[in-house]
View (cartoon, rainbow, N blue to C red):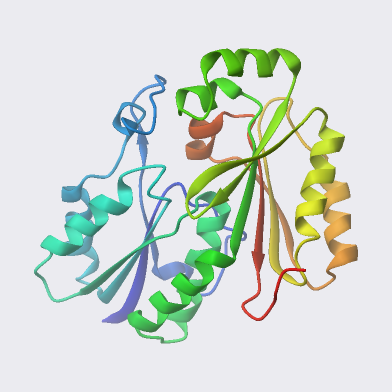
Length: 272
């Protein structure tokens, strides 16, 4: 019987398809119920989140193959998935050991944490050591979101509807930072050039990033990735840069034109 597996949800995005331990990573789906958007207080209106019973079923199935299960969910402020997983783990009575970690992030940020966990699991680390590594890595994952479709922010309670209408009429590009699992307004810019400069300035706050990723929105809102890639390559030659298309969950949460910047710093580095 294999030792440890990682269970995560389908909001996750990985920086590369083949990483150590990928065969031991399992994904529980987030299903869309309708196109009707509701605030985070009633997330069930937008998604059919996996229930406590669904997690219990996954735990039972995985325990046939694994002795230990580490669950890494998207930020609790975006969904009740972490709470449901914890409730299912508390009710679980079979032989497997289960630990639940709220990643406090999503998409590529969440994927980087899962990749760290899977690599440690592939190396034979026990679940308590893997959990310690993941929790230590969470504060080192930083995400910026540019959310041009401000009606999504209004429906999520970050802006009033009038502010959203005026902001979109003015063509503003609001930038938020994801801190401790919650969005915090950072600044507003007017052009993609200013957005690119803001992303570069944010990257420049780090001495030696472990990974930098750009999440592109769909439709016409595509930031030119080449200048950002070249900036990272010139500033941090040893830091990987990856480019990704926005995932279904992030698109439904912040709009299909949302763009994201992900920076993960190394464990032994410090910001400038």
